Image (tube, rainbow, N blue to C red; front, side):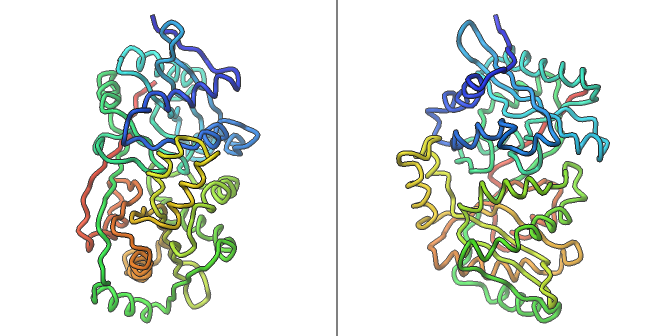
Length: 372
């Protein structure tokens, strides 16, 4: 018999976070989150997303054994401002038993009914700054710091339960060119002169801080026309600064500005922390942070995390200016492998950025929806 219990205590939240760690403890493709950070996500005193969101968390039990988890989420900005009557669900993990999945999602559906919502979609987080999408291709590929990993049976369970595709993301891997192709150099020079643009590079995190808000403003402009996008709030920007900026090597950030020093494009890349996080196994201490520091300084793999282009300059070659400097940095750091962040399959403008690098589409992830 399956029993689903609503989480009521901090002790249960720890069990909620730990379940994923236990389920994937022997999986070589799973990248564990930092447990402390994961706990903070569900703490209203630490995560300001709760200013505009609500969360109900559930654990499924067979006897005394935890066999699944899910979070039911409401983003009030999405519902009130964007008029989307959506019940979100995320942090969905379970053993290979469709009855466990059925029971967990039934609880999400019940919350949605009580809140007078019309459909449910997931797996997603509270907002666009959280992980999203069920892995449906690439199960034998190592995950990244900003994506969820899951077993193939998750997709099978959802589809058997009547859930249908809502949105889909694609991810690519490629080898950065070495040396820089002449055509990229020439094109970058042409674009720079044609639009009177220049790139900015940094030597310290402190130098980056004055531009962070502008980068997120630009991100909102870049993706505002995508159906799944919810505008990033200022408190989320502050959280991002605190959570991710320490991981970023200033050499891996490229900004493009116009003659008035207005930001028109940016790209954030990072050395891959996947292997380091696997070694840390959810804990920064006593030695986890050492693995992360080592990965930041010495690494042959990198990932593209955020790219933003002012709509006025999209399709005009601004990416060539940024990518030229990125490739130089990659050569200097010995980066020989690259992976993109998840991109919506209909976001062809961003996907076109990789066409000159012989990319391989190696992962797909999808959200599923169902009427309530």
